[in-house]
Length: 80
Image (tube, rainbow, N blue to C red; front, side, top):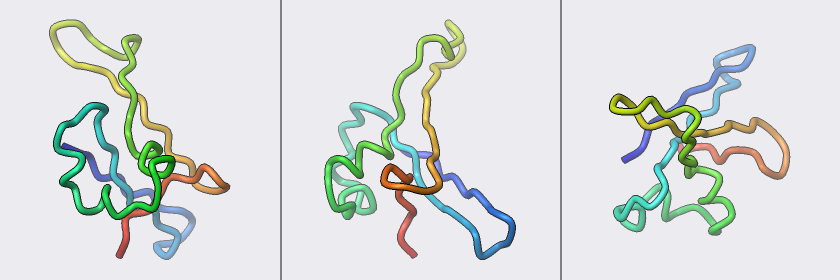
């Protein structure tokens, strides 16, 4: 299971398309995009973290996923 995100900058050419995965998903090893990433460190940046403070009991689980646009910890873009 994953969620796609598409973030635009000042123009359409400044676009980041990425995916957010959920922790402990037993099918992550079968995801071709996730598996194509070069290292565990990079893959970890696409896995959200459970956040109890965002959870609403008996309605929704809360997860945190920060999108970083630049620098060494930038969120990996989905390949074209």
